Length: 348
Length: 268
Ligand SMILES: Nc1ncnc2c1ncn2[C@@H]1O[C@H](COP(=O)(O)OP(=O)(O)O)[C@@H](O)[C@H]1O
Ligand SMILES: [Mg+2]
Image (cartoon, rainbow over all chains, first blue to last red; front, side):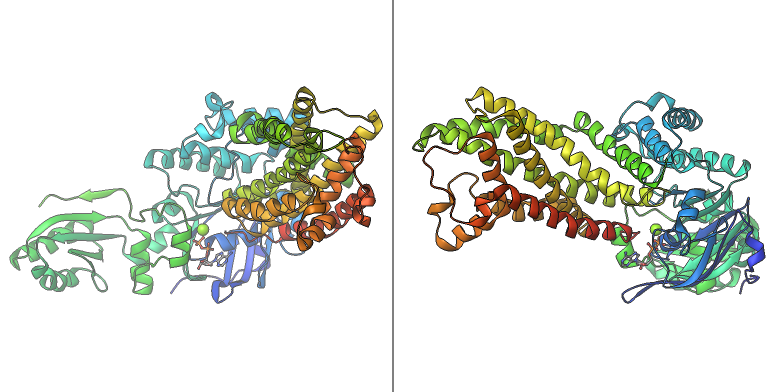
C-alpha cells in the first residue's frame, strides 16, 4: 500500500533517528506492534495517528523514558537502551502536555533546566532570557506560569526542550488543544527550528499539521504503520479532498449515498444526516455531484468541500474511521477535533 | 566536577525549585508556617491549660509531641510533590535530561528538610512565647532538633515511594493521612503511653514516633520530674532507637523510590 523502503542503518546518520521493529505491550494492550521509523538528519518526520495509536509510546521509547519490549532504536548516534545518557544529552523533548512548573516563572523554569544541563549559573540565565525573547515570552518572563495561556505554556515547554540546543528534537502533539491562532504561532516557531537544521520527530492528530511541517509522514494505528510517504503522496492515495453534504431529512439518506457513490472513490461515510466521501476533481466534481443530487430530489442543508483530514486518510486506508482508543481517550486531556478547521463552503 | 559533585548540584537545583514555591503557593506557606504555629498555640492553651501533670508542665510535655507530629506530616510534601510532577509530566521532562537520575528524588526529600527547618523554627519560637523552655544545654537541644529532622527525613523517603507509586495527589494525601495519623497518635506524643489499653500500649511503646518524641523531650529537658523511667528498651534508648529506625527506613525506601523513579510509566 505504501512505497516504503526498508530502513537501513546507513540512512539515519549520526544526527538522525532510526528505530526498527519497536514493540511495547501494556498487559493485553499492544501499544506498539513492530514500528520502524527513520528520520534522516535535518529532516522532519510527522508521526500521524489518532488517540491511542501509540504515538506517545514511540516518543517515550525514543527519548529513553521507557524501554521497548522488542526492537532497537538509535537516536543521534546512541542506542536508547544501551546508552540512554548519551541520548538524553542530544535530544530535546516536549511532551504531550506542557511539562512546566506552573508556580515558577517562565524564566525560572528555563533557568532550572539550564542548570540541570550544567550550563552553569550565568549561561543558564542568559540562555533562558534568549529563549524567552525568541519565543515572544519576554513580557511574561517573570510571571508565574499559571498565568500563561495554553499557547504560551506550549511555547515555554518547547523553549525548555531547546535549552541545550540539542541536534534532535521530539515534539509530542505540540498543538493539541490550542486555538487556531496559537497553533499558527507555534507552527512558525517550529518552522524556524527546522530552518536552523534540527532533526525533528513530531507527532500529531492533524493531517494538516503534518502536511505543514513534515517532510515525511508515517500514519500509524493500533501501534503499526498503515501508510508512509510525503504529504503529496498521502494525498494522492486519499484523493486530496472530500465532499460533505448534510441533508434535511433521513429519508433522503439512501438516495444521497447512492448518488454520491458515483462521484467518489470508495464508500461514502454516513454520520447522522451527513454524507462524506473522498473525491478528486475539486469544485468540478462537487458541482456535478450536486446537480445529480438535485435531479434525484435530495434536499440539501449544507455542502462543503474539505481538505483531507486524518479521518479521510483512515477511511481510505483502512476502510473505517479512526476510532479513539477508549482508554486513551478517557485519559487524555481535551480531545481535539480532528477535522480541519478550514473548509471551503460552497453555496447551493 | 565529578559525578558526586554533579549529583549534589542537580539535587540542589531541584530543591531550590521547591523552596521558591514556599513564597508562591499559599497552601505550602500555610502548611509550613501557619498550621504549625497554630498547633503549638492551640495545644498549649487548650490542652496545656486544662490538664495537669504532677511535677511538670503538660504544656512542655506537649511541645515535643507537637514537633514530632508536625514534622512527620511534612513528609507529605514529598509524596504530593512527586505525584503532582508525575501527573503534569514534569518527571518525564527530568527523566529526559542527562542528569543524575536519583537527584530529582534526593532534591525533593531535601526540600522537605528545608520546609521542616522553617516549621521547627516557627514552632520553637511560638513555644518559647507560650512558656516552653529548653532546660538542658545547646548541644542537647541541637541534637534534639537534629533527631526530629532526621526521622522526618526518613519518613519523606516513604512518601517519595508512595508518591511515585500512586500518581495522584489525592491518593497520596489520603494515604499519608491514613498512615501518619495513627502513627503519630498511637504514641506518647500527646499522652503518656502507660495508661493505654495493652495492645495500643505495646504499639505505642515500640512506635518510633514515641522514641523520637521521647528523645526530643529528654534532650530538651521536658520530662516532668518524678516520671517513672520507661520500662521498654525502645524508650530507654530513645536516641539510638530513633537512629536505627531512620537508618532502616532510608536504607529500604530510598532504593525503592529511586528504582520506582527510573521506571515510571511514561504516558500516565
Ligand atoms: N502506561 C500505560 N499503561 C497501560 N496502557 C497504556 C499505557 N500507556 C499507553 N497505554 C495504551 O497504549 C496505547 C497507545 O497509547 P499512546 O502511545 O499513549 O497513544 P497516543 O499517544 O497515540 O494517543 C493505548 O491503547 C493506551 O491506552
Ligand atoms: Mg499521546
